[in-house]
Length: 362
Image (cartoon, rainbow, N blue to C red):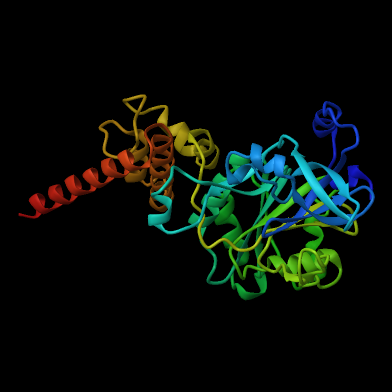
């Protein structure tokens, strides 16, 4: 397997040339299982671990290798495994706030979970059944824009929907300029929509909730059902199920795709610029607000609220924007002030609002 087939390019090559140890090999992380890393290299595929020095230099969990990362490694001759010494700088990364309970998250500021690294494009898959949710698609779009990857929306299970193309138009109305395709993954011929995107050396990732058909799409693109386990060398342990892990796959026709398990939580780590890309019509309206720092909530002279009142802006879309905007603001404040002060501010605002509602009812 050639490195170019794995997505290698000059961005990574220039970094590798600058390494002091010329005996290192280069590889790409294809799977991660409890501190064990499946590395694809030009010579072969092998499992490995990070070196002690690597762990010593690692400041936080998000600095550890993830699927899609490029690493410099050496061979462990004794058991024919890889020892990972360095993580090459990522071209980009797809991140969310680490999933967990509110209590767990309150112990530290915005723990970052890297979903995948060095991704060119992201397929946001939504099923045209009970899973379909326009607001969730907006959230995924914001995640993709934050990463710098190019979004593509796939509306799957068209055979279960009576009016799939009406829904396609609805999605196109909120996904400005993003290609939106309606397919039934059970029909092999309909997967032709992927052909122009899954080209040699280009890395894609599948995003979506559990049950939207991502596994079916992967199996059809591979031409066969995936193995549900990987054989790991004896020093690591027994074969482990990979149906709930991220995995980098090389497709027979070329192209690289990262299969991503369904996410129950999608807490964003985005910024204002990402929201502008997701909600461009609101950004355009905001230019006519009375105040330049308008939050488009309760401020007088808000052009965005006026558009909602006039019916020029969908109320559901406006509500989704406000929710994501508050989330982004909260994250930004937390980074500056730390979690507990921001949490206290939020609780104070909630109490003040509740007091206001009670007084209004009297």
